[in-house]
Image (cartoon, rainbow, N blue to C red; front, top):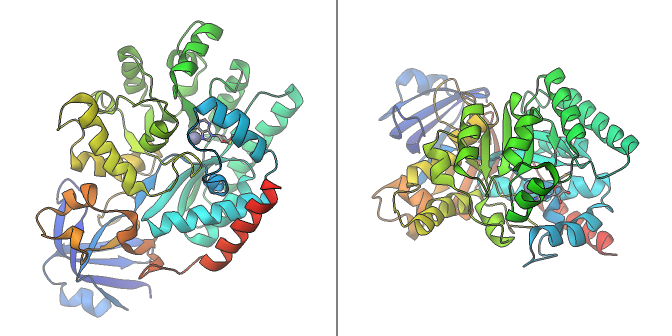
Amino acid sequence: MNRWLIENATMITMDPAKPVLEGWLSVDGSKIAAMGAGSAPEEEKRQAGGTVNGDGLLFMPGLINTHGHAAMSLLRGLADDLKLQEWLENHMWPMEAKFTGDDVYWGTSLAAAEMILSGTTTFVDMYDHMDRVAEVVEQSGMRASLTRGVIGLCPPDVQTAKLNEAISFARDWHGKADGRIQTMMSPHAPYTCPPDYIERIVAAAHELGLPLHTHMSETAAEVAQNLKDYGVRPVEHLDRLGLFSRPSLVAHAVHLNDEEIAILAERGVAVSHNPVSNLKLASGVARVPELLRAGVAVSLGTDSAASNNNLDLFEEIRLAALLHKGVSGDPTAVPAAEALRMGTVYGAKSIGLDGVTGMLKPGMRADLIALDIRKPHFVPATDYMSHLVYSASGADVAHVWVDGKQLLKNRELLTLDAEKIRFEAQRAFGRLKG
Ligand SMILES: CSC[C@H]1O[C@@H](n2cnc3c(O)ncnc32)[C@H](O)[C@@H]1O
Ligand SMILES: [Zn+2]
C-alpha cells in the first residue's frame, strides 16, 4: 500500500503553525503527503490504498531518544542504587567485557521492542559491536543515529584498533537501511579518553563529515577530576580539543556553570537531558531551563535500561516537565509544550534530522505514533498536549509507523519476534551472569 490515509484523527503535530489538528493525514511511501482539517478531500480518498480510522486515537510524531546504550537492557536490574563510577567500574564494565556480538544483538532487539512499544521511532545508540546494533535497526524498521563509543584507557595499539573500528562502522553504515541509519563518532567521555585520543577522534569526524557524541559533565566528581588533570572544566577542555568544531551532541551536561552554558549555546552544541538516569545514579539535576533560555537544543534520552530502568521516553518527558518546576520553584520552568518539543522536534534537531522527523508536516517522513485515548486518564478532552505530558505513558501507544511502514499494530510488534527476543535475552543474561 503506497498511499494511505488516516481519517477522523486528533493530531498533535508539533508544527508551531498548527499544533493541534482535527482532521486527516495522507502518507505516500515513506513521507507525509498532505494533511488538513475536517474530512479528507475526495481526491485523497480516491488515491488511498487503505484507510486508518483515527477515532479514539491521538496521533503525534514518533518520539526521539537522543542518548542510550540499547544492548545494556541485558543488564537491567543488575546493579541498582549505586553512584556512576562504582556502577561503571565494578558492575557494568566487567559484565560488558564478556559481551559477544550475539549478546549485543539480543540486548538491542529487546531494547528496540521496548522502544517501539512505548512510542520511540528514532534512537541514538553508543556502544560496541555496532554492526549487530545496525542489524537490529534494519530489521526493526526503526530510525537511528549509531556510534561505536571508544574508551581510551588502554595501550596505544588498542586505542588505534578501536578508533579504526569506529571509523569503519561509521563509514560503512551511514545512510544504510534505506537512509534510516546515520552515524557519528564518539569518544566515550573526557575522563576515559586522553586528550590526544579525543583529537584523533575529532579529526576522523572531520574527515568523514560526521557529528560527534559524548558523555560530558555528568557528575561533580568528573568536573573536579577534569580540573585536577587538565586545569579546566570539561566544556573548556573539549572545546580546546576541537570537539565542538563539528556538530555535537553531549549527554547529561548536569554540572555546568553560566560560562559553560554560554559556550555550548555559542558553539551550537546540543544537550541530551537524561533526568531518570541522572536521578538514579545520584548525579544531580541538569540546568535545563537555563540551557533552553540560552538557546541550546535540549532533547531527551533514557540512557540505558541499566540506569533507568526502562526506555519509556514518556517518563523522561513527564519528568523534564516536573523536575525543573520543583528545583526552581517556578511552575513555568519547563512548560508541557516545551517538554514535548524536547522529546520530538528538539531531538530531531540534535541529530541533524530537523525537517525530516519529529513533526507531522507534509514532506516530512511518516514517523508517527497513535495513542489510545479511550483510556480513563485521557478524559476529559481538555488539552491533549497536557495529557501527553502529565498523564500518558508508553503503555498507551497502540500503533507506530516509521517511514510510512507500520511497526506496531494494536500493540503487536510487526517487525520483531517478541517471544523469541524475550527468550534469547534471558538466555544471554544467564550466560553472562555465569
Ligand atoms: C563505550 S560504549 C558506551 C559505554 O558507556 C557506558 N555508560 C552507560 N551509561 C553511562 C553513563 O551514564 N555515563 C557514562 N558511561 C555510561 C556503558 O557502560 C558503556 O561502557
Ligand atoms: Zn550513556
